[in-house]
Length: 257
Image 1 (cartoon, rainbow, N blue to C red):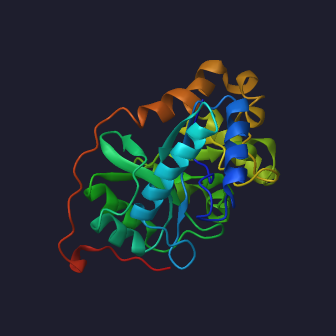
Image 2: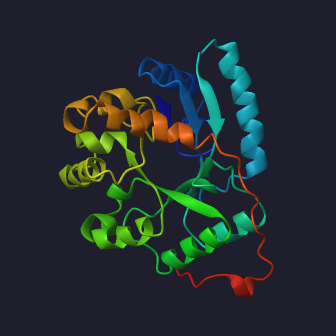
């Protein structure tokens, strides 16, 4: 399997705190059947102000440490970026570690706040699309606005944004309402991928295989394979197009937090 969302890179956000914890998390991921683990630290201004250069350096060091520990897993670097006006600056300065490509556009993991959908988020996504970038929206089932007003999520899926479901949402870890929405998105073929979004060794551990254990009986093995193998793999198979630079702030969309 391919896990496209994790917080295993140590010491950069609210994920793994130490190298030892990170290595143990990777061992757990391997035991769960993960062959490729994407490391996606938070980029969230005012909270986790990680830079592309620093993350790349840390990733390179971590790759060597994983090799030294003889852990048989392929690693890739991405990022989980919180929606906000700073996102436009990151794009303009080419400061996003891209996850890969989706439908010939560069893609990355886009996170909404837990409760709301900031006003103007749709304008921001349209702006990204104009730059040949399409965000992959993470754990929409855990956002209270999307949960209570599904039509607001349809605004983004209607623009072509793929969705990533948190594996443990399917087990009821975040509540029965979250579980119901996650299952509906999966059953109705509205989800692109399922990922662990693991943060630690206990409450948010690498649990991809365990969390999807019941899905073959619900959606069938072929559909499940698409969600944890084929669709994630497709992100890494296309060549990334050039990003169109933004020349002035006048082109920026209206966006309010």
